[in-house]
Each structure stands twice: as structure tokens, then as C-alpha cells.
Image (cartoon, rainbow, N blue to C red):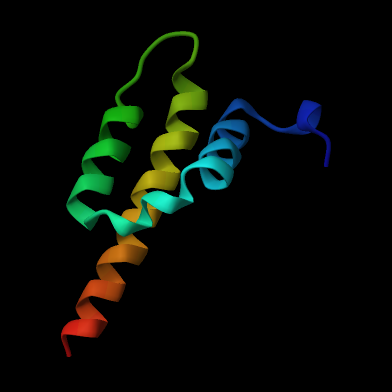
Length: 72
């Protein structure tokens, strides 16, 4: 799929996935805070920002699941 066919949400999600997956080393709380901040963006770039925020929240959930399973 070409970039022209992607929605702003998808472009934001893919951008963060490709460039910032190294942040999985951070705590889930830090990732949730970052994701929440991106989700609150308003205006012309809101949909792009929501895609980015969604990825950070998803990464935070995966990180938290890893934290939980490694504790047991």
C-alpha cells in the first residue's frame, strides 16, 4: 500500500512504529503518559497525532504485560 492510500492515523502509527520502537525499554507508565499526550492533540494534525499516541499506548500495554509475566 502506498503512503498516499494511508489515512493520517495510519501514517502517524507507522511513523512511530518504525522510528520509536526502541522506547519499549521505558516503563509502561512513561509510554502511557506519552500516548495520552499525543491523543489529546487538537487541530489539523490531530488524526496524525492520534495514530502516534495509539502506538505508544499499545507499546505500553505490551511492556506492562512483559513486566507482569516476568514478575511471576
